[in-house]
Amino acid sequence: MTEHRTCQHVAYRLTCEDVDLRLEQNGGRCEICGVPSESTYKGMLYIDHDYKYGYYAVRGLLCNACNLRLDDDTLERTEKEVRYLSDPWWLDLLKRRHAENVAAARRPQRRFVHVLGVERAAHLQA
Ligand SMILES: [Zn+2]
Ligand SMILES: [Zn+2]
Image (cartoon, rainbow, N blue to C red):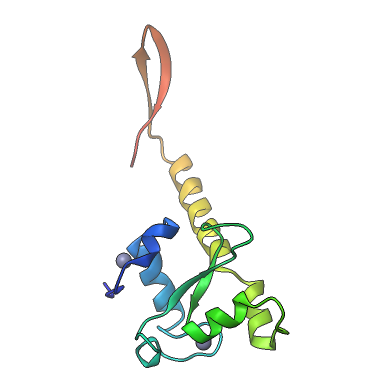
């Protein structure tokens, strides 16, 4: 597992595995300018999110410079920035969670239990 320096992702409710997969997908580079994480100011990439929506709206991993540029709504977006914004991280996370849910629903993992005399379906973890 990659070292995440501060595990800043906890605030975003992302797991270490989520971050590892993303780093694997982007090759450990800023997703806009492509600078390797070790060459950035603090030797790490920042989790970028859309502040208009909240912490769950993570868009990707960026160097400090690109992260600051995106926060400035007065700047015109470059082609790379537009491409980055059109395919946000949260969309990938949602697709993966959905695929997991679909796989879980296919497994016969239900049994009936009595709760206060009422029979209820218990959803068991795999
Ligand atoms: Zn971590
Ligand atoms: Zn960058």
